[in-house]
Image (cartoon, rainbow, N blue to C red; front, side, top):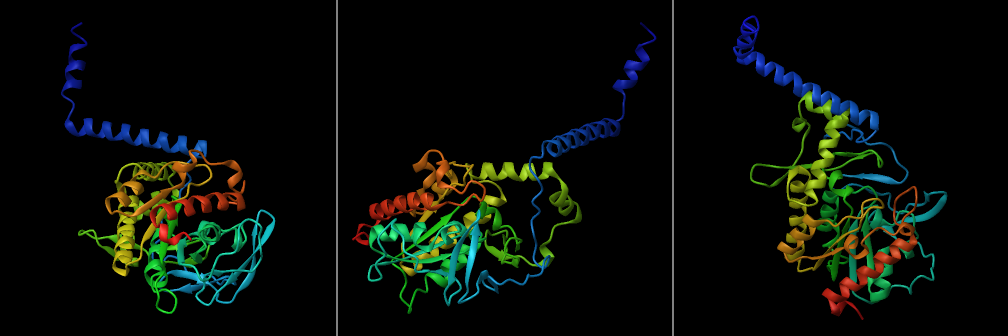
Length: 356
């Protein structure tokens, strides 16, 4: 019994640095085990944030670089856009956005050019990847309202690029006349794109901003790149990607994290721009195929600023499987028709004068 006493006393007298070192080793081991588990499962592949000056623009027969927005369609371009083995015609107007390709459809009556003009801003869902122009939800909604749609959706855009398009293209209107309504439609992935300075799918750099200490949006520069350790984790660590994913999920429910805070600043900027222009705004959240979840923080932000909001995820309850292309993931013609119907109902409810 007495032989064990010195050993027990020695353990109690272990120096503080040794205890801290053991605790740190245990933490590092736990993190390595979590990293290994993420890698073995194949979950949470790294999605490193891109920074200004990191990549050069690529040549494209479809897009051209745009200093303000990142890219636009090549004006006057007429080309096929393949989606799961089907080619859809894309025709670009003088502004570098998609215009009517004049292919008729029986899905809805043609929109009325004499009706109120509604400007649609968004990403590839608004742009209409995988559908004809006449099948887009912008055209479908306006056909029901007998309004005239202007489509300023762009494939690959993040929320920041949408707001810049709203400010610098949509609100300027045609011949100086602003639209009767702006509809800003987003998916959850658009908020992640905001944090990037380069879009690999398009092959072009884009504007990228961060918040300063006063909460103002400032454009990032190459000097804002993080240190070597964070860049390494961002590029290689599955566990680091998992923590980012967790923060994004939390940001959909509570207003926390850079993912939400930066995008909330962009949304407030859109709200202010529309108010100053005297143009009403409808914000729309369309769920992605495997993530039909209400966007609670977005709904709360719109309510706080008295901005009309439509959450298609709430209206649907769960994503109808036949509303999406099975591999591509974009809305198909049925999905666009369903969203178009919900849009027409929401616009009629908020602005009856726009429904004729």
